Amino acid sequence: MDNWDLTSLQRVLEETVQNTIGEAEKGQVPSYIPELARQEKRRLGVSVCLKDGSVFSAGDAHLPFTLQSISKTFSLMVALCEHGERYVFERVGKEPTGDPFNSIIKLETIKPHKPLNPMINAGAIAVAGMIPGGSVEERLEKIMRLLRKMTGNPDLRVNDEMYQSEKQTADRNRALAYFLKDSRILDGDVEETLDLYFRHCSIEVTTVEVARLAAILAADGYDIASKEQLFPREVARICKTFMVTCGMYNASGEFAIDVGIPAKSGVAGGIMAAVPQRMGLGVFGPALDDKGNSVAGVKLLQKLSDLWDLSIF
Ligand code: GLN
Image 1 (tube, rainbow, N blue to C red):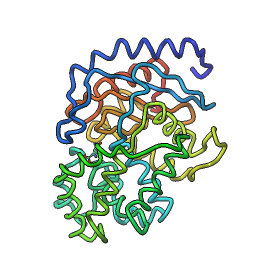
Image 2 (image 1 turned 30 degrees about the vertical axis):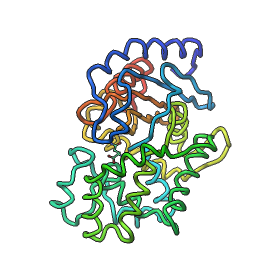
Image 3 (image 1 turned 45 degrees about the vertical axis):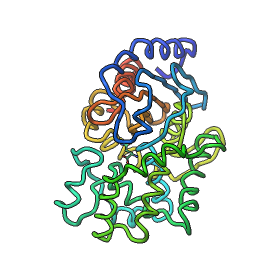
Image 4 (image 1 turned 90 degrees about the vertical axis):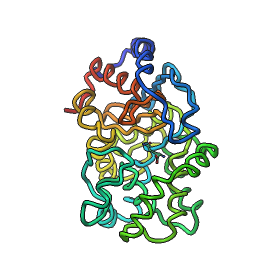
């Protein structure tokens, strides 16, 4: 269904939010980052960005939240653009783990000790280590510049309270990073690379912006708003493939069957879903399931996928 009747599209979004928001009761807001634990559970927002760049939203679409793991897609993009595939995949793998996103176990048991993929925390920290620059600010700016262009929001910023909150409680991520340093996957200053990672996870967005990011991925890097190719098709293809195989952590297989859209979730409750050549979706629902994905957000995407036949499989 690509000849959108735009009034019915808007109505479908509103109705679907209304009859899905109750799912939030089944989840919990995460407690391991204090600032995330303060989020209100019963929230649900969605935005859809169509091929022509028009955006439709319903529910809590204008509430700001932080990208968290969704940002891993864009740090990977910057690393691939700066260094090329060979360099990046010498330091991080291409396989799903079947373990929680912050697990440390396979880092030690698999040889060589490189993280299995760039969507788990260990892999994303390794990728952060690849972003070049003279200071953390300069390195962060490379990611921010890309995201500002993609979202069309020149004021995109890091939520400082979230960044500080994660930084003060990130012993697990610190353990991963020092292990990577010991294994020679990370070089340079570990604390600086962690700082970059915490900051890019704390970039604040709304579902409207996430839908725009997804729409550009769906269009293989082409941005209809600026009429520019923002990154190579090949980079878009790699990112979308990781979104299918590892984007929803160790629920990626189930999500591929139930929803069938390349997607990346974050622990603040966001999901970015890119339907190739058709649309981008941004979803926000802070109550998470035990794998760390938005409960109501996944359900909402499942309903829209069924209704509009969005599965790529
Ligand atoms: N900043 C979060 C962390 O490192 C990101 C994880 C996530 O969104 N799953 O724990």
